[in-house]
Length: 60
Image (cartoon, rainbow, N blue to C red; front, top):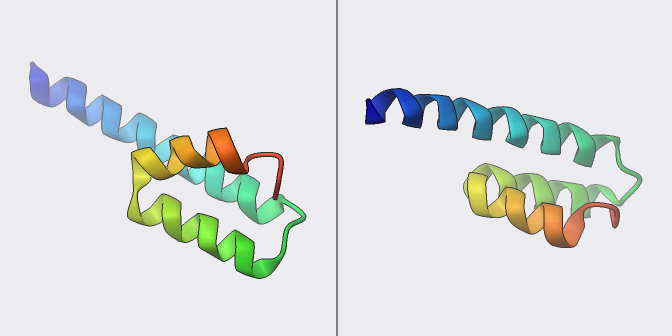
């Protein structure tokens, strides 16, 4: 049972990370800032997404 839930959770996190990366790319910030946020999300998928949602969204 736990494996099925973790698989679904992993897919949800992947979809949210892809959504966040698309939002970052479409944003109006500098290329360096975009690259930094994308790297944070790729290296720390859950924590990076949360940090971006709290601190970075709307500022890029």
